[in-house]
Length: 340
Ligand SMILES: NC(=O)c1ccc[n+]([C@@H]2O[C@H](COP(=O)([O-])OP(=O)(O)OC[C@H]3O[C@@H](n4cnc5c(N)ncnc54)[C@H](OP(=O)(O)O)[C@@H]3O)[C@@H](O)[C@H]2O)c1
Image 1 (cartoon, helix red, strand yellow):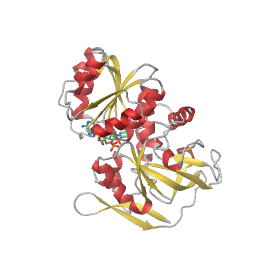
Image 2 (cartoon, helix red, strand yellow):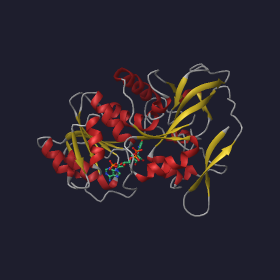
Image 3 (cartoon, rainbow, N blue to C red):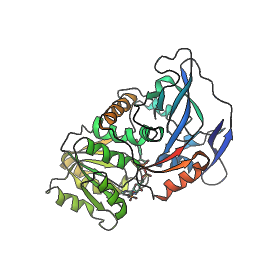
């Protein structure tokens, strides 16, 4: 069977190589999945660039955290799923519920653990969830990282309720998922983008207020005006150090910032954090989420028949082009690789 692997090379970045490898066989508590679709996240660009130590294993790392497919064989002790079940892998195979533990980092797919960009994968049975019938494999493959991160940030940790005001930054995978979830749950949604045409697309899928952060660099003032000087209740903060100051200026008293992303890099913020104190704001560090949250997300998504926004789908043979497309920033929502 065919499988992509990231391999170290001299100089910057890693090589994405397509290899022929043996089909996996499950240990007693493992399942083998015939992967039908995968999706890319910004993290996968960081992995390919070699910025993560975990992406350069000797012998190669199978990339991508996100994939969906059907179970084709199970180990003798497996009881949670059966052959033929439609499933997705969990980002952290062993984070089942409760608080995060640093040892879960060792089970992050497409990083410390082997990922989903492969015709078949073997996963521990505890690290998969069953899929509702209404989702295609391509749609389901958008949930494990972007979908769960948005849900865990807004609903599980953020305690979003109907009528809340929610601000999303940019129109990438996490933000567009958060927009769809926020609207499904009765929130009022703000979203920013560098592109007016993407803002138009955001309005079509429910955004109530749209702001171009390039042409309106002081966009927090617009948010402030549009919220009658109250600010928003939640910010889906995917920018990191370079946008945190603006996000703090846009959030209202008693509000919540979900600190998720590093789109502006890994440097420390060059802004005072005092607004967090002065406004009694909650700042939650978010790292995807656990399996129980994933199952609740899928149940809520089924109720609302919520489908992710897939911008473009690439064939398995063109996976490298999918990376390049994501890196170009031209996408709106998710980029998918159809594994066949
Ligand atoms: N902590 C976690 O659990 C977790 C999970 C998932 C993702 N993340 C992180 O969250 C971030 C987003 O991930 P993703 O997969 O959704 O990325 P993505 O799909 O690649 O989204 C990229 C988009 O973000 C927008 N953007 C870029 N720079 C921006 C800025 N300075 N201000 C506002 N928007 C900006 C752009 O949207 P426009 O083209 O509309 O301008 C760009 O197209 C990444 O840093 C990723 O590592 C973290």
